[in-house]
Image 1 (cartoon, rainbow, N blue to C red):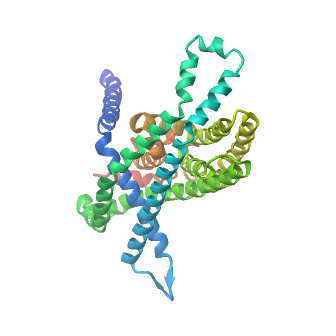
Image 2 (image 1 turned 120 degrees about the vertical axis):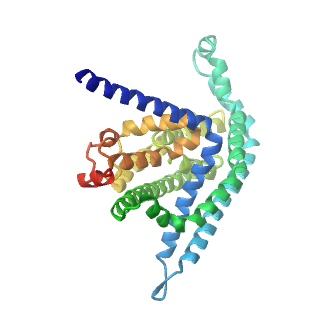
Image 3 (image 1 turned 90 degrees about the vertical axis):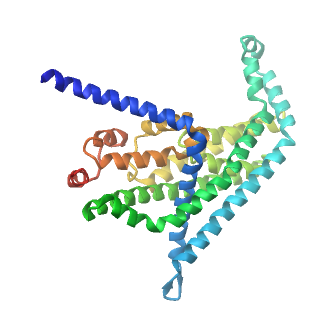
Length: 363
C-alpha cells in the first residue's frame, strides 16, 4: 500500500508532463490552423469591448440599441485595422528607398570600431554584416505582414460566426452544465477572465499609446527620419512584455545612428530619452494603473513569453500575457491545480473562496 501511494504521484506527474509536451507539439504543428482562430477570438473580444463602450452612450435618457452598438463597434474596429494596414504597407515602401544608405552608414560605423578586424577574423564580421542588412529585415517584415493579410479572410469569417453564435452561449452552457449553481460559478470564472483581460488590454493600450505618442514627439524634435513609423512600432512593441520595450528603445537609436556617418551622439541622445520614457511609463505609471490586480509573477511572464514566442513567434509574444491570465484564473478554481496558480502568481495569494472550488468539482 505504501509503495502504491509513492508510485501514484510519480505516475500522475509523468502523465501530466507527457500531456504538456504533446500539447506544445500540437500547438507548434497546428499553428497554421489554430493561430487564425486565436486571432479571431481576440478580435471578437475587442469588438465586444468596443460594443460595451459604445453602449454606455445615451440618446436623451435612453441607451443606444444593442445591434447598433455592435454595428458601430465592428465598423470602428475594421476601420482602425484598415488604417494600420495601409500605414504599415506605405511605410515599408518608404523605408525601402533609404535602406541602402542606412546600411552603408552602419557599415562605416562598424569599420571605425577599434579592433573590428580582429573580431571579424573570428567570424563576427559576417554576423554583423547580416545584422546590418536592413533590406533583409524589411523583406522579412513584409513576408510576415503578407502572411497575416492572407489569413485576413479566414479570420473575418471566424469573427462573423462567433458574433452570430454568441447570443446562444448561455443556452448552450446551461444545457452543457445542467446545474444552475454550477452554471453560475462557470459564468463567474468567465466574467473574471473577461474583466481581467479587458483591464489588462485597456491599461496596456493607454500606456503603449502614451509611449508611442511621446516617442514620436521626441524623435520628430531630434530630426529622426520617419518618426511616425517608429512611434507606431514603439506602440505595438510595448504589448510584448519586457523584450518589446527593450527593442522599442534600441531600434530608434540604431536608426539615428544609421541616418548619417556622424550620428553617434544623436543615437546616444535617442537611447537616453526613449529609454527614460520606457522606464518611467513602464515602471511608474503602468504599475500604478495595474496595481496588484493581475498578480502575475514577472519571472513566469518572461518564461511564458519565451514559450509562446517559440510556439507561435511574434504573434505568440503578443498573446502570452492574456494566455497566462486565463490559465491562472482557471487553475485557481480547482483544488488540484490551485498550487500551480499560486506558483504563477506574484505574491502567492489567490483571492478565491474555498467553497467555490469545492462546488465546481462536486459530482
